[in-house]
Image (cartoon, rainbow, N blue to C red):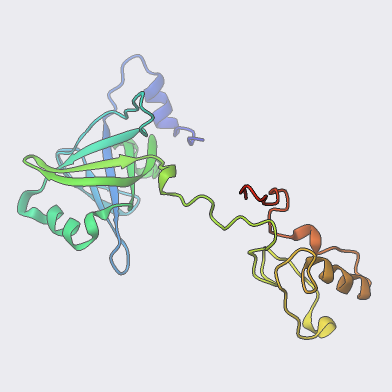
Length: 226
């Protein structure tokens, strides 16, 4: 949800004629040690915003596009490459692919508020050099880069670390002694066996309800299956 506009920006927005000047600023994170950020503003002078210096740069931006083939919305920036500074950064940091970036719209008369008119967090999806400079393709969200599933799916085995946060086994070693878990649901050393430990300790709790496997996955058949 976007933040509400500051009083000044809200007044200018609702005015019949506004003299406010809005500029576009850009941030690109560089995976240096420690991490740093490139900061640019499309303006005739550099600006300071939230304690950071934004260097002036003639950056052009395309509108966000989405086609009928299911390709993801993206924004392309054309950055200058005078002196090949950008090319050197790209070569040193694998093209900055996957790095977070931010597109910010600012009011020059309201910089002191520290609040943008709006901003968009993106990631760099593709970069290449052109005759005009450096073309940077940014995507808002790319589900194809997320491993699915994040963990293995099994009806027989729980992937959670025993006594870890997802496991949640809470009886202290002073009551149970040195015990392990075979990550099964109803095996000799699995979740239901841990239920008996709660009962012995007079604790009204069941560990088997926290089993991290997928018991609803159907059993395999001779013809194949999960």
